[in-house]
Length: 121
Image 1 (cartoon, rainbow, N blue to C red):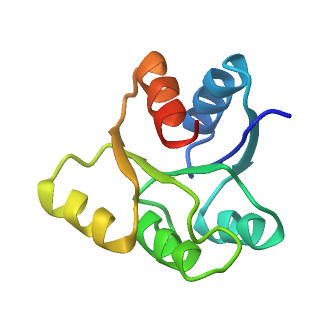
Image 2: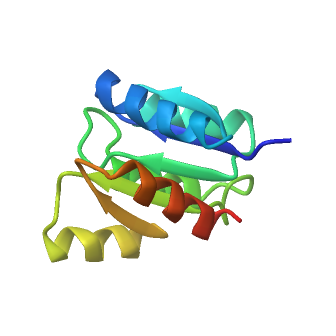
């Protein structure tokens, strides 16, 4: 059974690119258009890895990460922040919220798959 990945991003283009990349690598991919929809999916099922944008309307990536870390089902699930932000203070805030890793957009498809394989063997 393939590993399940949740991608959360308010950009349909990014969701499509991440989804295509991960599906091509053999992963089962679910998508959410914002943090609230992502949290609803996380509360319904267990994922092997979650990839979220940082800046989204409503529940942003940091708030989503904190909420996931507070739930029993996905508390230890790897969470990768995929964002245009490169500010060290944002990375620190991501780590403090419980993020496992940080990837900068535009992303390299091979690097994305490599990172997912590292955190979700």
